[in-house]
Image: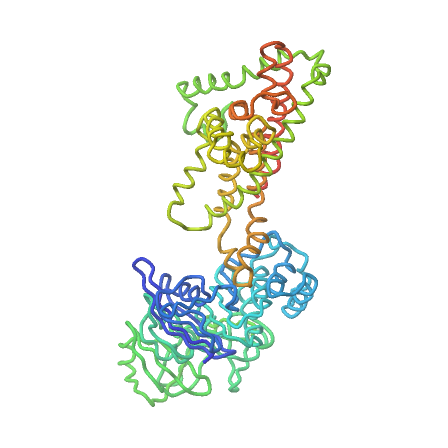
Length: 350
Length: 273
């Protein structure tokens, strides 16, 4: 494991105690409600919040180990941080913001600017180079902040809700941007988010935090299939399918077709909540435009509903009340039909 | 409908009560009448002549040079002190801030006496300085700069500390994650972000140094050409040549107003942006 961390932080009443392991090139999502310790965990990883105990090891290098009195200063950790509110240096141009990291790592002024230019080209921001941060939109600022962190050539990339302070359209754009550039990033990424879509699209693994402890961990789809609490169910309650859109029709990879509420062209993600899926024992003659056959392969009760996992040409999760489940007398292995109204399906460019 | 003389939002709460309006008007009169008097009584016809009278230009030159030196010393020493107060946590920080504020509230004459006890020929530091070099500070131009620095430093420190506190310290964190040392972060990130506060602090310190009287006359004396700055010249002129004192007073007033305007127009709006 490249990142191996046991984080123990105590702040007033709050106590964080969580173990994180991430391999190179992987993206770990930290999910959880406000005050669950996501940001504290991120800050502890970056060395911005001192730990009481535990340890942080990155590529065999011990970065922090309070018991052994090891604490590598922030600037020697090679960890890039992106905050929700960007924090671009307002007095520097975009190019000089991105050049800041290379300059500190020993490059001369001209060489640092050249490196920054290469990074801006890679992230498609070349034309913003001379602008001051204040003249950019929120989404542009966040892309510059991510580019600046990448240009620092970090081993560990820490992203604190980078998508949170943006409007819906900017968020879609930035999610694509992150997906593209996190794939190319060779180091470890830790992403704090509370959006199920971000977790499903961007993360290889997620850890759900609650009151400073790991409530559940696993791949996003695994956690979505078997949520251990109501809260986890809603944090990761999303069906996500890939396909090619042609107007409001999406050709899914399995061969089936999906009708969505919005029209797009090209590769897309289509998403809908498990609560939007209805389950039938016979093929329904309903107004729902999306109807697929399948088999019940798992049922996980959480709170007042049961999350039913339906496998088939289009694998979906459905949230059903126990009463409905009983009325249908569903059991694992049963053949069923799943239906979703087109209105409930949203597509995003992939 | 908007009533005459009242802005729309005030109309709802009624007119301003006379209990507040009358003292407010008295206060304005108290502040403005002396200035009007100064301007009215000034010998406008012989102004140019009086300004170029022997001694006035010398005092002006000395004032500008010493005030600028004092402001420079304040900058070099005060900005680091402000940074320590704003960014470093240590026991006694509040006490230190109080100590820094003392010259602001203490009578300048007392400051002058204190400077003598420290840097006079028999002073705590002065004795050692005299023994080592044969030089003693009081009654020199250096003493003028010292006295001015003593009274001006708090203005700069408090202004810069406020500016540093209001800049997000997470900018420092970002710089650190990008590999910057604290010194580089200070130069390239913290200081540029606090620049409006630094500049307004510098101007305030300069203005305070320019107007310094009590500590200067106590610690540096009143020797024309060496320690006699403009305020001391006013004091000296009052005994013999009242209209001369008026002219220099007018000069100092004009300087103060120019500083106020430059602060308002440029740096205070710069902070707001």
